[in-house]
Structure formats: structure tokens, C-alpha cells
Amino acid sequence: MKIILFGPPGAGKGTQASLIQKQFDIPHLSTGNIFREAIKNETELGKKVKKILDAGDLVPDHVVVDLVAEELEKDHYANGYILDGFPRTVSQAESFDQLLKSKKQNLDAFIFLKVPEEELVKRILARGEGRSDDTEEGVRKRLAVYEKETKPVKEYYEENDIVFEVDGTGTVDQIFARIRALLEN
Ligand code: ADP
Image (cartoon, helix red, strand yellow):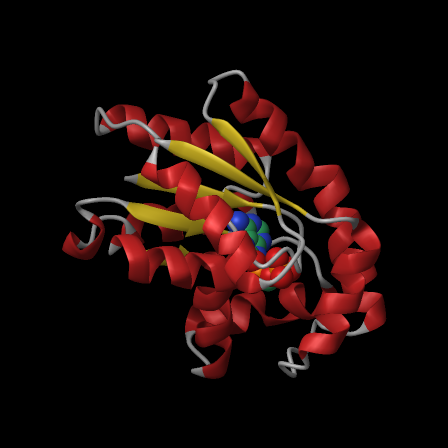
């Protein structure tokens, strides 16, 4: 099963993706996690993206697209995957479509985790993961980038009839139960 888990920053994509991974045995690919790991390990990629992440901006499309294409070559993802944080622009979605087409593959579901904006800010500031972009200013910036660059990605997929909206409020278990019901059908 190939799934895109989509939603604004703070919607709980990472948390839900790990639960889906466990329940359905599908690997989770988070571009944000890959970037944070690269920054921590001070790799070439990490050096290239650190300032961008700290500012709450988006990493250039070609960098992300190449990274995801390379990652998906691994055997690990042969039977499917959950994408979290990608695609984040319409251009990334178009490139990803091309990639799938070239492999004669299809996407099974685009899950939109819907959470009101005020709740998002509260959650991110409360999660206290110590992420350098989790300041009030950083969060507002990421939300603004989401509205402008990322939200149109949902409209892009709506043309394919694979978009499922899930209420992203409530407890982690309640939200997961909604996703699970959807994926079991
Ligand atoms: P969140 O959604 O909570 O802000 P993520 O972990 O998904 O966090 O992403 C953190 C940062 O990583 C983003 O603000 C952005 O700088 C960078 N990033 C992650 N995925 C992408 C992507 N697909 N395109 C461009 N930048 C990305």
C-alpha cells in the first residue's frame, strides 16, 4: 500500500505514521526526519539544509525529489510506504507522479489530517521536542508556508479521487482508529 499522509505542521503526521507502520507493517518515510538526521550527523545534505529548516522555509524541490527517489529505490519500500512531509509543493507532486508512472505504480490513498490552526500552534509549542524550528515565530512561518505552498497539493490530488479527510482532533488513539477504519476498507 502506498500512502501519502498529509496535513499542516503539528497535525500529528509523524505520530500517526508510526502507528500505521506498526499496524500494517508499511515503512514510514519522513523527509523532515531525514533532514533532521542529516543535520545532526553534519552530512553534506545536513549542511545544505540547516539554515532552511531553522528559518521554516522549504528545501528546494529538486533536492527533496532526488532524495525521495533515491530512498524509494531501497528494497525496504518495495511493498509500499507511508510518505510524511512529501510532496509539499505542487511541483514535488508532479515529479512524484512522474516517478510512479515510470515504475507503473499507483498511489492508494492520500490522507488529509484536518486540524484547526489554533490547535496546531498549541500542539507544536507544547510538544517540547526541542526542535530549533519549534518557536512561536517558526511555527507561524511554517503555517504560512503550508497555506501558500503546500495546501494546493491537496487540491492537486483531489482530481484523482483518492483523498480521504480524517478529523485530526481528539486523542492519538481516536485519530488512529479513524485512519485504521479507512485503511481496512
Ligand atoms: P512540520 O510539518 O512539523 O513542520 P517536518 O518534519 O515535516 O515538520 O518538516 C520540517 C522541515 O523540513 C520543513 O519546515 C522544511 O524546511 C523541511 N522539509 C521537509 N519536507 C520537505 C519537503 N517535502 N519539501 C521541502 N522542505 C521540506
